[in-house]
Length: 258
Image (cartoon, rainbow, N blue to C red; front, side, top):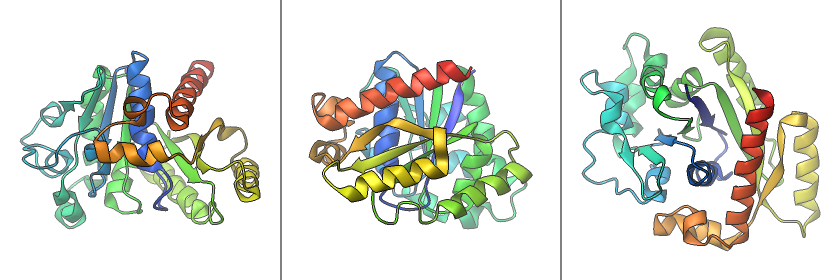
């Protein structure tokens, strides 16, 4: 049985999608069977692994809203062996309204993930940067939450709200929800600010913070426009090296915590 993990921070621009794509790709290259679920209406994860959002017949939108599709119908392979995706579509933007009145609307995604879990080692859910119905669906469906935090001045802004949301979901919908860990992104070792942010985040989250930090890297920023993870686009870049190290640390933590 696989493990489902939501990659979430309601603050935008923290490296959430970049982490989703590249951690998933690295794990797939390490022979893990991985699925990405894109539930962000922007669909950046979908395009970031080279999938065109045009002419997709079944996406996360249909799986959430309609009952006449099996979850497997929405899953398509990427160019990376062992890595599949359930893509997003722009129709997800209206899903909050469409779910109003539906019975068990908070558990629509959970039903799909429970079907898919036996087929994968890891399922990563790329959440939108908000605390709406889509995010609640994700937090209800997964085993844990991976939180990317950018090394910038307002890094911890909104974290207390994020933790409060996790507590609400634990108390009402998913009592076993855990914090998988915190990954620091966009680190610049030349600035005192980045170093201070790392120290502050470690004070708040303690041992949940990964040792690996993801640096600011031009190749990381370029890769999505080519529809590739950075480990495919430029395997020797500092961004690719950092994500491979992160994937190794992630797996080591998994082994240790079993």
